[in-house]
Length: 333
Image (cartoon, rainbow, N blue to C red):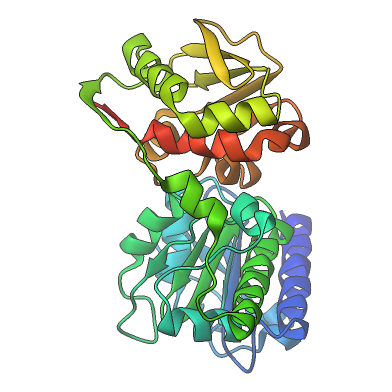
């Protein structure tokens, strides 16, 4: 355990320096933590400089009691960090105060995604209102993290989680860059808008009947909407969308295979023998079917599993994005 603790402290120190050097953490702002084992986490102490951390600035805390035997006190954001570990299998948490992110979301309610990379890796980033310098409503942040591994805390900063610090930090850096791109684009055109988003969201048909989630009737209703959708038909033909894609519910093993031919689903099978299989637990699928979680983002962030090469699947990004939007048009229970 001592060796593991030493290694994790080194990772925290390295991450703190990278945050500081990238301008995402200044002075004594921000905090970092890592899961040490099932019972304990390591978290930066209160009042520390993330860019100049020493091993003595990282304290061990029991997850059940939130107590530490060390001299320095853990970050005041310990309640938020502990709830993340209690609710998700995440192994690291990054909380920083990036200047562009803070400036943008102080004035804007949502991010205008201007690049495919932003859509693909970040999706719709949740924004949580804050009333105090310390997060006093961590439950709201936890709910938001169910839809995205990255959450903005308005007038405060951002929180990301992941399997490794590289993953959580990459999300933070990607959002800071996306905000920079949006700001530069606005210099050229204050009325800038994304035509792709407009096209994807227009003329969505809704099915009012509610079906048991992941039942044959539920999935068939989605197929019916897909085959009536002119946008998918046009893009499917243009991009030669001819492939088998399966979706699987991990809890029960239920699976359905969409057999696409030129953008049309010509057959729906009850199996997952396909070159591409997207699988997840029921809570994750619920978020997807409600339209709160983008499937591409869920795969890149590890919330959903994908069998097959994401790069190959992404060549049909546009029609599949529309497909996933149609998911929420079918009610389930």
